[in-house]
Length: 318
Image (tube, rainbow, N blue to C red; front, side, top):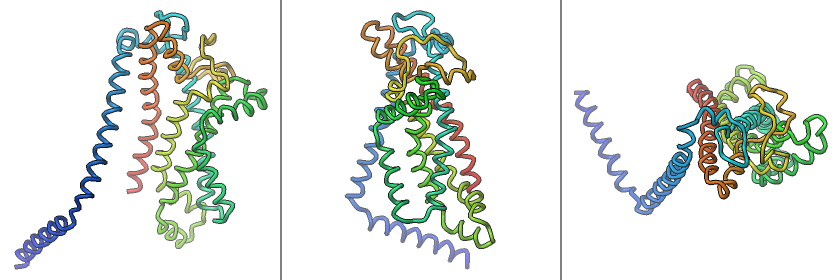
């Protein structure tokens, strides 16, 4: 008797849900959802077309001399078997490493202070507004700032127009993004977690370290992904702080710390220069497309580490 009544109750509940959905069906909502789906489809279509076009243009270089292309050096006058992106990869690698070392701890620490320690008054609101404004400042402005501070003022310690100056400049560029995304992730942490920890006698630092940061870690890592990708893909600030747009005499290794105070080149500069040279020599167009593919692989390889860490923290949170 109970089983039959349970089944009947389930059928009645299903009928009620169906009636509610039919009664609340909104034609305008359906149209809005259709436009959203159309926008998503167009975005994916454009991205697919761009990726296919780049891979097709660069496939000739990647399929015939992929290893030599990765280990080769820059040539600005002609296409030959020695042309490659090794020097650009080294520059982009150290920019990514410096950004992770400088921008991420400072940005996450500033977000923790603003959300967990700083009093909510006019001063903190003023600081938060200015941080959000800084996130929208053009990258050229940061390039001028890096030129004045790291190249001219502190050039004795940074090496002047060097890879270290460029990396510090890009660290400042992405710092507002790190602070904003980390603040939003910390703010989304349920207040009940804090109250429960305080209820059992935890200190504020223990609440932040054991409750807030583990819960906010996936959102913080998502922000670091965006910041890292932007730092690696910027070109204008690098030109202002002294990136080489032609031949680069030195050929440093990935773990060569001495390269930080030397003249440098990065992948965005390589791609820009080869694209400009494609009008003079069509062979540069294929090389530029191949360099774009290599840069995409490089960014995805770095981001995959953060994605794995983010998924690990999400599993812990569940």
